[in-house]
Image (cartoon, rainbow over all chains, first blue to last red; front, side, top):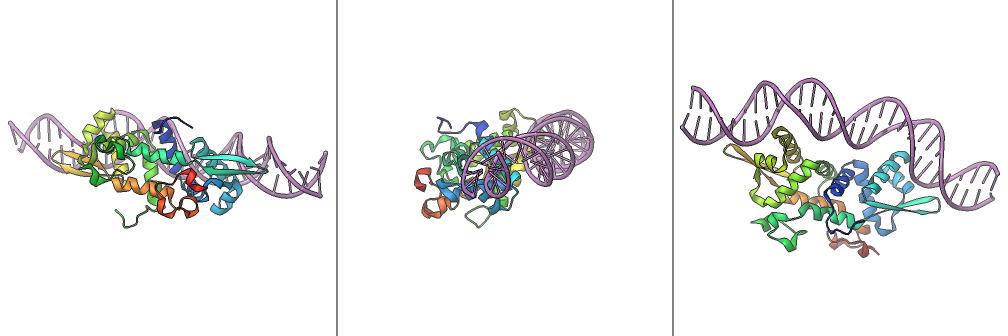
Length: 115
Length: 115
DNA sequence: TCAATAATTCAATAAATATTGAAATATAGA
DNA sequence: TCTATATTTCAATATTTATTGAATTATTGA
């Protein structure tokens, strides 16, 4: 991963791009629910009704973007979500919210806070 | 906008897709900093060093996705960010975090919270 | 080692998205 | 009304991204 508390622009682009595809967005949401245990690729495929090769393509896309990680367990490859990457993504978006007037409250920046 | 506290999947896809382009991501970040005052299209274009027609294309893409809104002020069209749409996007991602065990703490779901 | 299971890779094709510059629309002020 | 300013629209082209199914790699247990 990274040292930075905020993702770089390139990372953020890669990650938003990864999330902008139906199957991949569903994978991430499924894995968020699965928590740190994760799920084997095959289970994700059958849950989402996708072919193995299609899933594999999307999983490696997500992994390349740093949004999910994988580990082998026997014949299965278990995928799980990288929570800090998701958190960094919202941070990146709301960075310096409203001209930085609320510098200590980025994550919670609300429209009414910006008056 | 919407009644739902969480964006629908279709909305989320549209929004992530809108954010997965360099110029558009920069526009959103610029507008987040500008706060509720917003910025005229031309000022955004010169700030980002983009042609007018390119900016216009990306701004209408963002507006269609519900991430920015526009109002006319004289000859200028002022764009500003739709903060609730940004907030709903992270909510959508982290929805039912870790099998919903932490149902009252979605936004703050951390990897170590999921054990 | 052999057969079965789990997942990935590859190449061809299909589909979606971005860029460019010229033309069009809308507003403001002289 | 005329001209300048601000922005959008359009069509052609270029680029990126997704899908499919067959072939490949890796692991397990008999």
